[in-house]
Length: 305
Image (cartoon, rainbow, N blue to C red; front, top):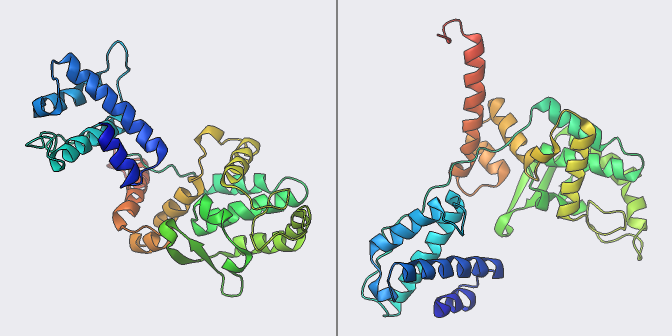
């Protein structure tokens, strides 16, 4: 097990948290094998691996049942260990390759109605002074472009072309995309740049701090965590919105869902969101189908039995 973890750390470069999770999963696997009378990887059968998966899902006196996501991670660790042992010549067969991780339940993105988005934005802008102008501009940009929070707080002033009404977003893996910006977001950003950002920038020790668009009260770049806190605080002030149901992706999910509800093509929404595969975007179509089903059930004269 140690050799496999070293391989993941050195050659695969996995994060420390991932390695720690794999170590816990493999230690539990080792204890399971020992309790089953299996002394080494060479004695493991496919039924032992599938039995371990069942044990994870059922739980025992010392461990609660694992969710499909957590059990899947453990099975991936075990499959990787057996694959590594085969390639290293430690075992003659990979007995774990046919044991498939459980499929996690598909979680539909959480979107909020248009009126709730408006309430969030209005609540964000209700604060007095530069913070209110900044917070409103931030939420308008998030909803108006579908940007991830990390993309929004990473924006430079020059990334927003107000003349062309587009913004350049740096997505995952450094992949850039250009997204249109609506008039509401443009007006909010313009007001922030004129009336709020200079005051925030002046709070920094060196005066104006670089070209970062959204600044904190100390004149530095706004962090992702602060942006999330702004969204949660807006939900608390808005009323009628459960703050615990608001996540960093709430406005991004709402952006995509509302576009599809309005008739946008899923391929267009894929490009706007920066998804590498349309399969990722298609999960939003399930949300709109649910909405269509509700409308049908309440509106069609022969929908109800």
